[in-house]
Each structure stands twice: as C-alpha cells, then as structure tokens.
Image (cartoon, rainbow, N blue to C red; front, side, top):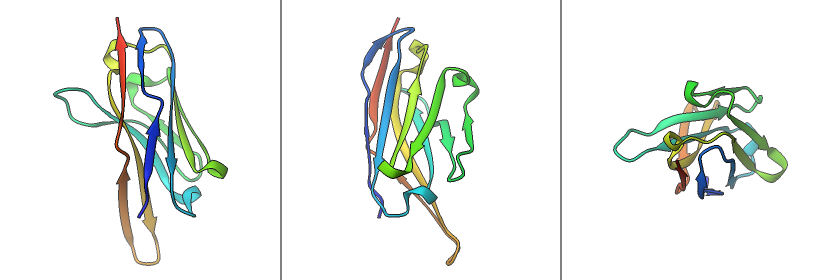
Amino acid sequence: QVQLVESGGALVQAGGSLRLSCAASGRTFSSYGMGWFRQAPGKQRELVAGITSRLRTNYADSVKGRFSISRDNAKNTVYLQMNSLKPEDTGVYYCNAHIVVVADRTESDYWGQGTQVTVSS
C-alpha cells in the first residue's frame, strides 16, 4: 500500500505562483510513475502533468510553459510548480502514483486526498 500526502494548495491571485508537494510512502518510490491531476467543479478529473521513473515528463496543453513537474527521489516527493496561474486552473489537485510490478504483471494506481487550488481573477 502506498500513501500519498499533498500540500501547498492555496488561494492565489491570477498571475501568481504556487508549488504543490506530494510526499509518498514506499521504499521503491524512484520506480513509480507520478502524476498530478485536477478536478474542477462539475468537470471530470484530468491529467495536468506526469513524470516517469526515467524523468520523462508530459503536460496537458493548457499548462505547457506555465507548470513544471519534478521529483526528488531522496525525499520520496514529487512537486508541481505552477506559474502564471489563471482562474481556469482552479480545482482540487490530486497526486497519483502508478506502479507497475513486472514480475507479476500488475499495475496499481494510488491517490492522495487532494489539495485545493483557487485562482481569483
């Protein structure tokens, strides 16, 4: 079982910045695929950014050039740096760990409890 704890959500004005953190349990964090998702009121949860164990990153088109995902394997932590925030970035941001166990061909997804980001205009 993997536990994920997000922090860093806040109320911020448009144009501002925030950094979200997600601390993960587990001794093999470096092998996890990690991602940030968000869910706005009345909308489906969507992928914002992801980072693989090999440090490959991907971003939603809506955040490219403004958000940056990174990880510190020594601290079992993944970060989401959010700059030039817009009101449409408002939502609950969830940390996700995607774990593949090659030996038994299983994949598992774990989620944090979410952290609220509100961007005022």
